[in-house]
Length: 296
Image 1 (cartoon, one colour):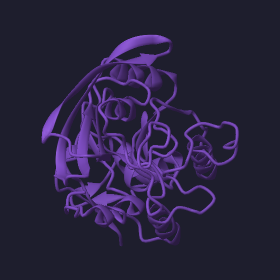
Image 2 (cartoon, rainbow, N blue to C red):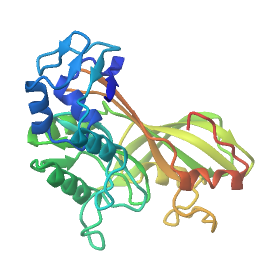
Image 3 (cartoon, one colour):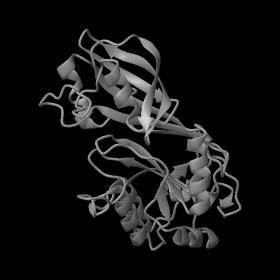
C-alpha cells in the first residue's frame, strides 16, 4: 500500500487539492469518489473532503492496479505529453518548462508547445481544459511557469504579478567578472515606452572571464535580465541577440528560472517552487572552471 506524508507547507490545502498535487495523473472526480467511498485512510480513520491536514499526517492510498498506474504516471509522464508538474491545486498549476519549448502556439510551434501539452494531459484525465499562463519565459529559458485555472484564478494571479507579489529568481552565466552583489537599475523599452527595470544579483562563483550569478527580478520587462547585463558589457553566454559569447559546447542561452515564491491567494499557503539547474547547463559549467554547488 502506498503512503503519503503531509508536509508543513501543505497543511492549508484541502484533501482533494493535496491528492491532486501528489497524484497529478488522476482526475479530480476519481479522487473525490475514493474519498467518498472511504478508500483513502489515515491513522484516525477515512480521509474525507472535510478533513483537516496536519504536518506529518500519514495518508494510505488503496493498493489497486489503477492507483499504481496513476502513481507511475506521475513519476514518468507519457511521451506524448511530457508535462512536469511542480504544483497543482484547484486554481493553480505550475509546470516546469523545458528549453526550446514555446508556451503558446505560434508559427513553428503549433503542436509542440507547453499549453498544448497541458491540454493533452487534461484530455487524458477526462476534465475540461481551462488553464492559461500568467507569465512567460523566453523560448530558450527553462523553469517554472504559473498557469491559472479559470477566469477568476487568472485574474487573481495576474494581479499578483502586476503588484510584484511574486518572487522570481534566475541563475545565469554572464561574460566577464561582475561585482559580488548589486542592483541593476536602468530604463528599458517596453511596448514602445521607456520603463524602469530593477534586478538584484549576487555572484555564486566568479573567475576573471565569467560570472555565475543568481538574479531576482523587481520588475517584469521583456528580456530584462538579458538587456541589462548586455548594456553593462556582461551579456549572457549563448545569447546571440544581445552579443553574448556562444561556444560550441553550450547548446542554448544560459538562463534558468530556479524559483517562484508567493502566497497562494486562495489558500493562504506560502508556495516556494524550485526548479534545479537542467543537465544541459550543468554540463557546461566545468568548461568555465565553475563547480556546481549541491543546492543548484
